[in-house]
Amino acid sequence: RVENSDSRGALIVLEGLDRSGKSSQSNRLLSYLDSLGHAAELWRFPDRTTSVGQMISAYLSNKSQLDDHTIHLLFSANRWEKRSLMENQLKKGTTLIVDRYSYSGVAFSSAKGLDVEWCKAPEVGLLAPDLVVYLDIPPEKAAERGGYGGERYEQLEFQRQVAQYYQALRDSSWKGTLLHSLDVFLCKPVSQMTMAPQLKSSAFLRSFWFL
Ligand code: NYM
Ligand code: MG
Image 1: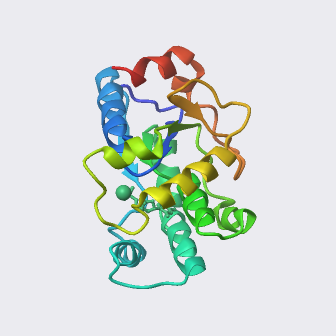
Image 2: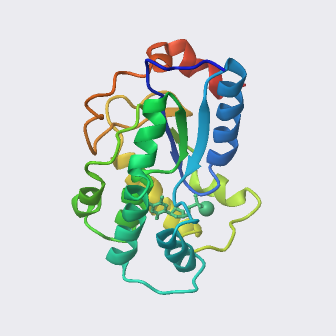
């Protein structure tokens, strides 16, 4: 294991529609970083293990009904309750690969008709990712992949809307056909933290996607 005692880990976020391949790619990235000897962990949001996460899970599986604003704030609260743990891990030198983050929060709630700026507001102050990778799959293709799991939001028409809101969150750093980077639009990177050294090398970024 490479001990990054003087440097922090990287915060790498994967985003995309349901069934876009985030979980598979996250796992591949984790194995790749492991093989390089980097300390890395795979995280996901929503984190359904907390009590807030259980409320979210009940909502997603249609066991409860919640106002759209309420569920939006719960998704955000679920990130806030993990913020200090994330920061500690990063400062210890552990790289975090995170399956969904604030971009899901904004894209999914905006697609329901909530105001985009209102959706961004509760995310301000969360840790800014070093890298956001958007897996750009056509909604129709995603829907073909073994079908959706039957949770709320897993419908083609709605996923089309979500894809449009993801597109609206992109910026000039958007590039390529599969590897897309979204702007860090929500917050400033944690001030005391220095750039994660792994990400200084663009070879690092190129290397892991098509293993
Ligand atoms: N989702 C996820 C949101 O609507 N807002 C959020 O902030 C997050 C993190 O939850 N359809 C939606 C996207 C997914 C659903 O996620 C469950 P997953 O990755 O399928 O467990
Ligand atoms: Mg899902």
